Image (cartoon, rainbow, N blue to C red; front, side):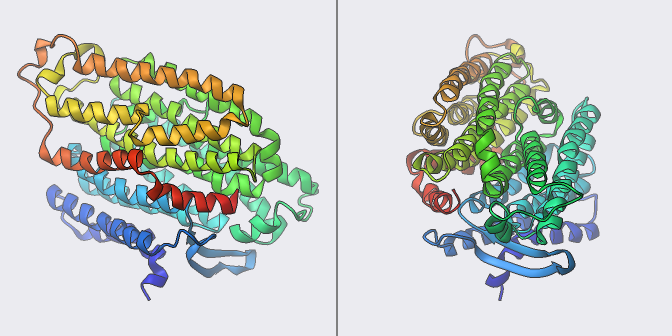
Length: 501
């Protein structure tokens, strides 16, 4: 019975826990954190059970739940997972408890913060599990609102500006997305993703509002593309990201970089390419150009920062550009081996970037908690007094850099391998960005760890604590495992990629 509703349990347990927290005393922050942490572990444990029972040799969705929700308009409560969505579910259920452990820096209204974080987890998971477009949009919006309040209420000095910019950008994309979903539902009579995937690309929809079927498809396609491009974010829609990252509290930055950015990339793979194969093929070249620009400009933007957190924020634009490059290659070369390799690399990059970005933002937060500054020019030589912290930072930075033997190398290699045969010029330009990735990573490590010690910190900074290492160790283990044995993840992704693309 429970196995038949395993996805619903994973999806709604965080919300049930958040509602239960209403009855817990607000003046017991340690108890609240422990309750939120252990209840957030339940979806992770259930995801491990789901992973163990998932058959990677079966094409299509598994553990499907389908119940009529609004039959009059063709919408249903339809959940399912495959090799594209299950890695994202695992990443989400792993990062949320680790982010909650990192919430010790939250000193005010801890109860509200933790409740919002649990609501956020349900929104994120719902996007990855939904097989109904209307349900997808509901969870898409649920994931937006808690993050706005997390930035606005617990962020830095410019939190009001950053949270407003975040909500305006993402809401702009969401409005078009809702319009497109409604148009598709009205034109086809269903919001079911599986039905739409088999009928929408090939069967002309009914005329709508006096518009031709081709116009309906074009409007829907561009609305989807804009919404997901903002969320990734792709240049030039990326400007909300550095501000949101910089002002968000450490747990918020971890989940924003680790999971929230992946919603847009997942939308491209799950919705845009299968539902609009012709349009995707036609405009894939432009997407490849934007991906290359994002990779190069993201790296150059990161290099130009002296705020440690802002540097890591711009690095997300750089790294997510490789995901978009893989999407563009898959759109252009659909049905070929190159598309399969590119999709493997894109999904793997989403997973690996989630690990390394969350780790980097946490380590920046660890340093900021002690030094109360993120100005790189004020550091220097910290390895001599923080050797353990320095080693952990070096390892995580090398994973972000894409050092062979760590996960980032595998995913970026696959994207480049798949995209090279399709877009050699865009891929070659992306290598410039990859070069500057090394430049900004080494710049950060040099300014923080190397050189003469700034005596200002000689007696002020303390070594990374055991409870902080507990957060980093699972991330580091997965970064290493993905570098030396990526098959545990790629076998699942590859099977789904072959079925869909």
